[in-house]
Length: 71
Image (tube, rainbow, N blue to C red; front, side):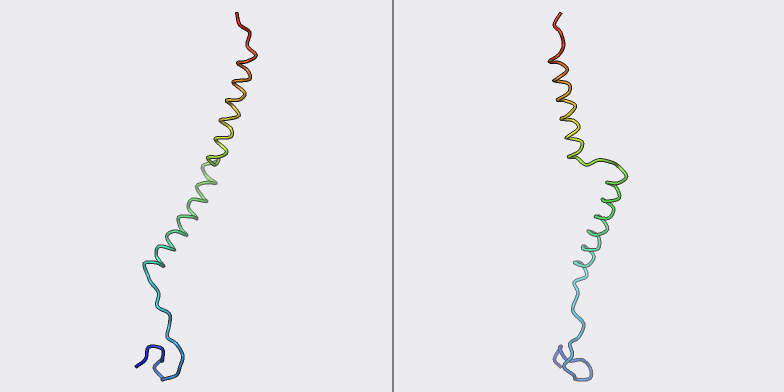
């Protein structure tokens, strides 16, 4: 019997074959993305924000050092 025919012999196709490992991995990836988003909210700023603040602090420190008087 041809796989594209259902039990009644009509030309309707059977359900698509699904790779369960691919489905599990996709679901795990989606769950991990949700967890990562929640952790970003819980634990604060992004790496780029931290780097920008660090550079700003270094700039301020250099500016202040340049204004110090030598004794």
